[in-house]
Length: 210
Image (cartoon, rainbow, N blue to C red; front, side):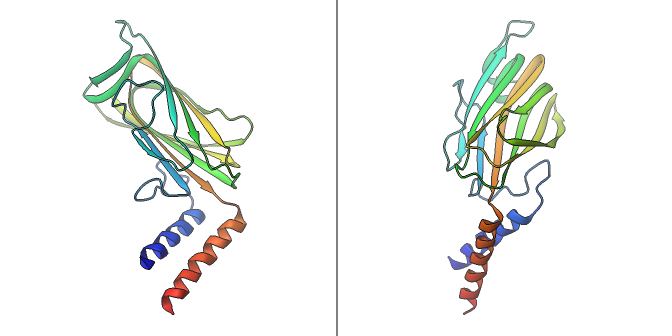
């Protein structure tokens, strides 16, 4: 048990002092969602709208997603149990996703948010709608994965972390499909808090040696 505690604290210290400007967050914990991170995944197993995440690992509250799809050239716009080789897909000419993610209510030094989406079509707009905080766009990567499907990863940094943030995504095409959405977040404490975490980790190591 003590070995596990030391490992988790050392892992946290490594995360806090490591660069995370990557397409996929290097700080995603195993299992996911351990503080100070959160993990939420929508696989759209039903047509619920607003949709709660099927996997919800956020100790600060439950994220939610509002989904809007408009009809394609054949008038189709809805949730489908299977579509284009995937299970649980929202399909239309336009797909707009508005995601609300609750945060740690304490204003930490900064927060990173990374969003992964499995989709078909053209991603034309993405934003974090939080004008009261400083938002830095960290970039995106798009990877084709076959049969017209792609995976996009998009990152932002918010200084300091807000109480919550609203993530907006828009996909266009006559065949805008959304298969899944993953949102990873991490709140980085103030330097004084990071120092305490470091000291706590060292104390555990010393106690183990004694």
